[in-house]
Amino acid sequence: MNHDHSGHETPPGFWSSRYAIGLIVIGGIAGYFLLTEHLAHVVGALPLLLLLACPLMHVFMHHGHGGHGHHHHDDNAAHSEPQKPNPSKPGELS
Image (cartoon, rainbow, N blue to C red):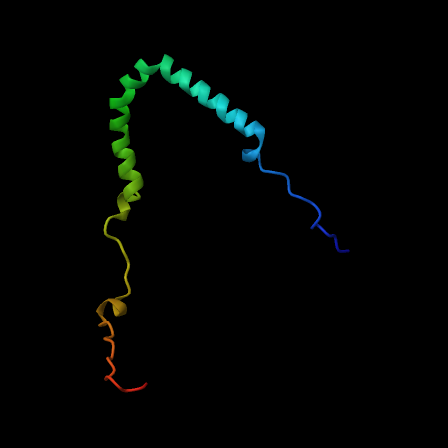
């Protein structure tokens, strides 16, 4: 049984619908009012957030404490010399 799906259009995704646009607008307005009403609390917490960011960056950027200098390389590839190109003489066809 073969079904021809070429005549059917796929519905648009959620983020391209008018509901998503309304959700983004309402979220932006709510975020604006939360920030303006609670600006003193946000500014007061900035030094603490900066101190909290330091250990988090260390953990996520170093991938934990076991990731320092434990890279495995192929011993044969590390000791082999790179091949030098063989320049051809002018006028010679290869």
